[in-house]
Image 1 (cartoon, chains in turn brown, cyan):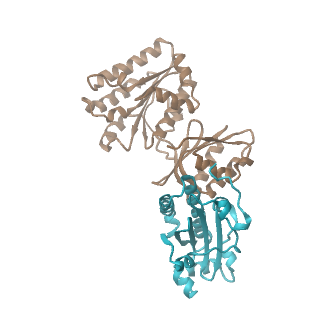
Image 2 (cartoon, helix red, strand yellow; image 1 turned 135 degrees about the horizontal axis):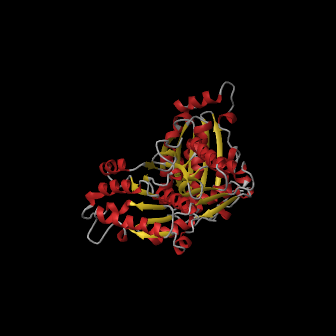
Image 3 (cartoon, helix red, strand yellow; image 1 turned 135 degrees about the vertical axis):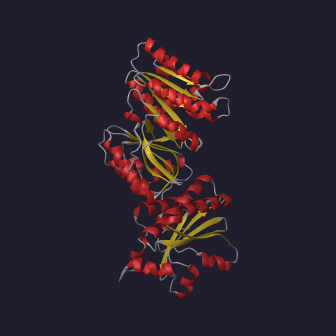
Length: 289
Length: 184
């Protein structure tokens, strides 16, 4: 079952200070995409800070978020880490908070009743002066969001940040957020995909783990609408697993589409097992990584 | 699609089409055993990794290596799920062909020579149940997995004997023309 100690990213309140810990870049992107999508849909102003804003726009794009249009309309801002939280003289909590307060002030001036800020905290892994003030920044963000109509999502890579740092900054957050995970071991990971809705499989999938696959598919089916099964990072799948996915697709109302994102080798397996007999299923190829 | 869309050739598979097995090949003295690896449900991942590495090294193109990996996995999965619960993979190269034999009857040498079978051979007998015949032991040619094996392999042969079931898939290495080499 999905880990219940975490808050779902889709259920964050209007003034949340959420700590998103992720093990894979896809998790950060997916959960950020959900945070952005819901913020835009609520009519809030959305600020996304990352190392590469252009890349982030493209990656949000395939997740069906019209980032470019939102930026053009002024509802969304894509900021680079070095222009936001980090200054030319290194890092200081005071300067970073100044940037964040400016974002909130801009939103209010433009009449937005809410602001969502997604921060990829990867920049804090680089050696720089003042980085010991990171917990100070998190503490001040906690104070700033309270009652301000602003929510902040801080993304920390749990593989790269040391446990001491994570333990220091975690208590300043009001929520812990992570992808709902159905299965996770060194060979395979099955988790929920939030945008577009569905599930994500990474690693190698075979009949030994079809119980977890059944659980994940069952939850995806219960949510309305089309289902995306993202297998972009899946390098192997066996016939039992393919059969289970095809049976799940076949059980759906024909009005619901099932989109399979996969590499050519996986695409071939689905074709060999007759996926073309299921009209609601479409295969979307992705390049090998 | 790199030959992945070929349909299985009924004439080249099935119990009647017995290809030379490992013992016969070894007797020729012309082949080298590339891989000899026991597997059970906990080691299928390692088995796939080993098969992939050896197939690449033997010069099998990437897409065909993927095909070989799925073929071996599905045969091994059958042994794990419907056969003895464990088995042995042997892989060798001969005359521009890559042969992979999946055997679910314990140590092939002892079981073939003595007809008694090893530990897992007895397990297979028990799994078959009282009065169970060989066909029940490993329901070959059923299910999507074995369909997939027949789609991707250049040749396939299956032999059930007192010691267990032995399935061999053959993949042609590059340069070998399947239309010339495929048996009728």
